[in-house]
Length: 116
Length: 377
Image (tube, rainbow over all chains, first blue to last red; front, top):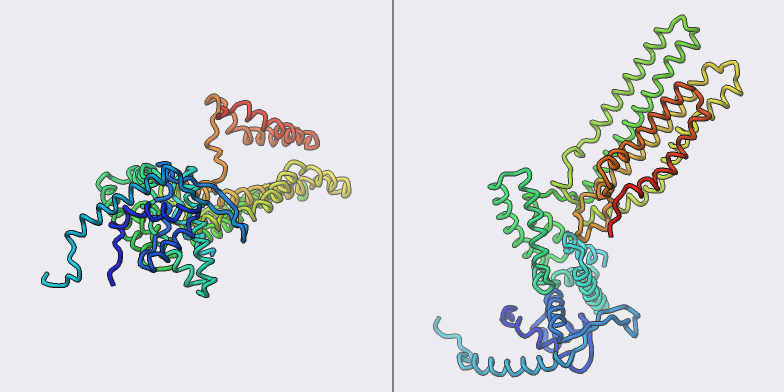
């Protein structure tokens, strides 16, 4: 089975995280679980990848972090919420993706398994 | 859970302890804990859960970019190779750097493959610096501490025997009525010889300790925790022994005094009681001091400014005195007053008075030290 290449997806980790934050703030493990579920187990983001995305986006002002105790277990977690800047960035990334997809797709032949 | 915590500790052990690093460690720990708990609730075994969490952790170099830690990571590496340069030629260190690069790659593999336990991370870390710095494991640290307590016992016993050898003079002088003085001298010399031999054996029992210094060794995270633990459980023992030891030395005239009051007939021999008390007191002080020093020198192998630095003992060498004279004065403070005390006591034999030196000198020490050091902002 083909596995997703981390080089390719790297540019879109931010997009995925921002998408998941659009409606509600969330925390590290929750996000990594949602990415796994939404991708139907095809993409499993590593903890270090996730954390580096968080810090990078926080530095750029796309997300804000805050500490909050979980309602059920009382465990303290670092939550992230999206900023207006982040929403703008997300919209840009979506646009960029449509363009990328459109361009790359012109060079992709479906079901190509012919002569190497 | 403990395995995951250790794994994370090991990964972060040699990073500088900056707010960014602490924060990263905290958040990563939250994520790992969540994942671990979820895996358990899905019915995985503890081993499976630990394996999955560690194999999906990713690798640390990824964090370097995001945290702006790259400079610091490079700096940490440079520090390591600087240490090499001090005792190796430039060629050697170039080789070491190559080795380090290779083992970097292999430790990355180790953390990415499904090895699934923290010991692989530990070996990864060991490999990383195998060419330059020795990593002392927990069991090695245990062995070193055992050796240290063995040699501490022998050396302190040897010193005590040397002090006791003075008994020979008293025996020859007093009990044998002064007629066979040379027998007393011979006894003294024989006992002193045995004492010196014991000290030498004690010094040899140190074994591996000699080769270890901060320039060539460091502690693994496991070893750091082990030693820190042992050290804190020993510290009460240490203060007790030290206090009793000091009391015996300072108040050694009391048993002597009592002895001569109770048995006035043997008053001349009361010095023997004095030596025994002194010897026992000195033995306690030296023994507990050497053992405490063992824990501290091991913990001091942890690099300054790294995450392990919290385990470092307070660094006496870091104290800055206002002048070289002040530094010299403070370094000879205790030896000078000890000599003064012994000289005064043995020349006047007024032990009942001379002990007053100790409380006075002891109380003065702290304000003096404070007055003579440069305060850091």
